[in-house]
Structure formats: C-alpha cells, structure tokens
Length: 147
Image (tube, rainbow, N blue to C red; front, side, top):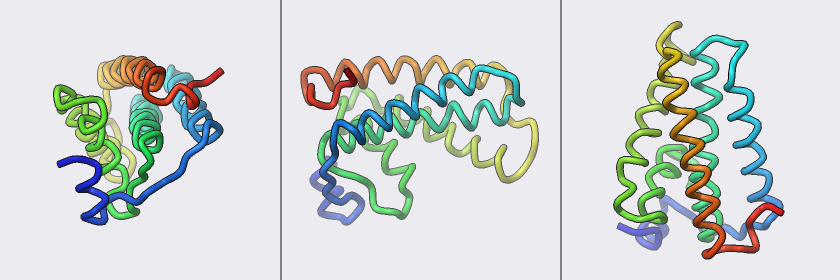
C-alpha cells in the first residue's frame, strides 16, 4: 500500500498545508515534550508525550499533501509513517500505535497503567522521531522547515 492507495480507498483526503500549519504542529510537539517532563502523574505525562508522536506523523502526512479522514484518524496518521519514511520504519509505526492503546486505557479506564519507564521510553522515541522528521523535511519540503 501507499498513500495514493489510501486516498483511493477514502482513508485519506488531499490537503494543502502551509509553513504556518507545519510550524504550529511542530510547536505543539515542542510544548508536549516539555510539558511531559514532570510534575504530574506518569499516566498524564504518558498521554502528553504520546500526543507529540502523532503530531510528527501529521507533519509528514500534511507535507506530502494528505490528511486522514475522521474515522481512525490517529491510527491512520501513525500507520502512514513507514509509507513516507520507508518500510524499514514499520516498527516505528507499531510502537506509537501500542502507546495509543495504553494512553486510551490510562485516560479512560484506570489509574496507574503508565510507569516512569514507559514515559521516558516514549519521550526518547518521540525526540528521535522529531529529529528524523526534521531531517526528512529538509531535502523533501524545505519550505516547511522552521526558521
């Protein structure tokens, strides 16, 4: 599968982004990485850290001219990661998808489902993904790079 197939299936729609929109998404990522540092429960820190990962996937998707349809929006955004950065990144889509499920449980079902180690692992993953996304933007879509 590729993004064109997903568009044809109705899972994505065309989207014209802008440097401002990409900058706003990257700003949300920075805010969330900062806010997830501490001072609140690991559950909430995990949720905040998680929020940054799909935003980075949105940057990739928007820069390529697409956005997900509303149904399964987070899932589809995350699953586009290897389609854009390469098939060798499938594990990089599987990890935030597992985090999405955990985030839903700690936000809606019970307390204490995220540990400090879970938070630190997710923060490290998201920081690394941020660097990869910025490195990808440079040659692919330099107009969207933050100043």
